[in-house]
Image (cartoon, rainbow, N blue to C red; front, side, top):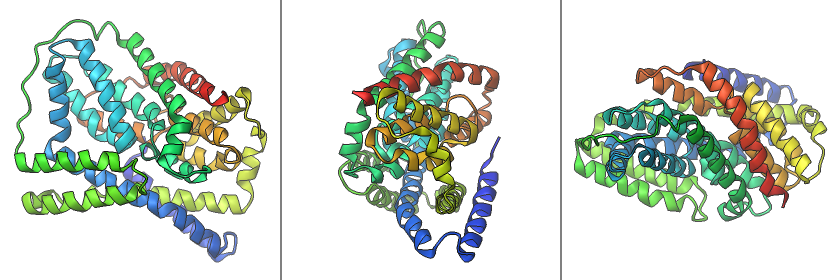
Length: 387
């Protein structure tokens, strides 16, 4: 498994290699500046929304929401699971797939245990929906933030209009497969557990308000990094006042930032050298269903072989000539990484959190179910793009 330290080391090595390429003239300085101009808003958003999510979790926002869902379900296991599905979709859509994997997963595991239920159906629900529901909004996935500026109208509404059909299909098919897989464990009733204790009600309330205000602003037309950064600064100020010991450098996902920065620079070098043209040459230029399946399939295979972000960066030049092709690529690299553990960073982070919670994941079963589900989800989610 790839831990955060390895991510940082790979990112650092890629940055050094990119620096050598710039010094040697393989990547012009203007090209490197263009990459930086495209990437910095994305990375600022990732850092800011991660800080917001981490601090909100420390204040107990996710714990209370999940526990209240357990009470609202009135002891019906299937209804509780359906509410967790809705929570995972909303969390992924507005706070990104990594937030769902890292922060929501231990919460739903704790809620399942507190109510005497098996944690695995809930844990697998979060990781699958963290990936497949990440087609919903530009802020749902790092790949979306990169792709939205390649659309003719680079705004959230245009993105939603293009991806609404695929996102809806991907979520519905994912939920149906999960239900068929776990329907026996999700039958019956449970005695609802108590609500978790909130250590600082004022901190909890202010954190909940900040998150509640930030979420609609992320799709208001503002650049996503602006409301996310404002929310992070507000919460950092509140925590500096109420709980200063929580504010640490570890809140910043620096390993991910270093890895992503190195990856972007490496992709720029590859593009400058013409390597990415060779990668995408076999995908054609069509927008019919078969062509779109080809683009999405290449994205899904690339993600499960080498990771979703490298796959997107490698295939973007071959898909950016038409919005439907770019959307098909996003379907492949977002909804397709359900087979190998390294296909999505969210899956790796999810696994680390489950290990910390003492939940063992049968990887062979994960791979087999993913191999069955991913082609079906990706294939059906592409269909709306052809009409």
